[in-house]
Length: 263
Image (cartoon, rainbow, N blue to C red; front, side, top):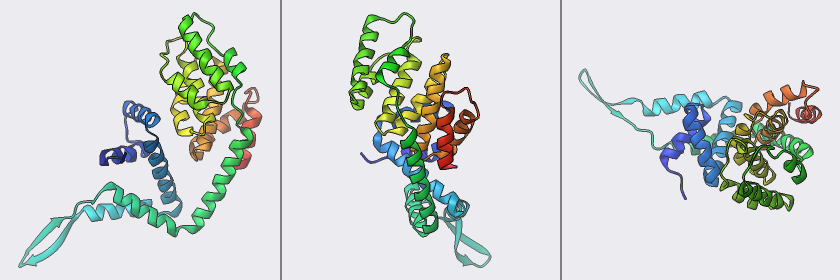
């Protein structure tokens, strides 16, 4: 399925933080259901990182504005006839940006080295909760027998490493006040274990609102790792720095190890 022009415009607004909180949440839900959309978001994010590293983002914006501007085409006496040359498509500029990125070989080398370090940091420190630990974190309040049974089925799939099954099982499981944060954490962790950090990120962000300090710390830690895995170092750093400076945080030492690799 090809993405529409409108979807490309929304991607641009998402990456430049121009969406409202409601629209941003809706778009992140769309990404969960559309792998092609997630992949394109990450491709465009990488392009923008290249812009910043090469110092051409502003120049490209100026070129776009100039291309869109009114241009003189013929003069008759004192009058000047003009035309408006419309921007072909937003995707045209994405392709142009990709070409420009090829010129930044030095940046590419740096980016590849940085990506390898981030991947190494992730690999060395990512150890998802065991199924037994997830069971211990299950809400202790009143939960219906059907809900508990379905969570247990998902836990059995998780223990067997069948993360696609876990995601399918939890995606259709209604959550109430007792289980919503746990479900988001469990589902986010499963996406991350399944090497789908883009899917994990919005869920772990939601899970951080839990009243359970223990679950909140876990959601925060795995969210930071999801950002590292997703090559969003700038979003991972604030959390990693905060966790590494808190010696009471159970992920204190691990955060220091990651920072040592990616800073």
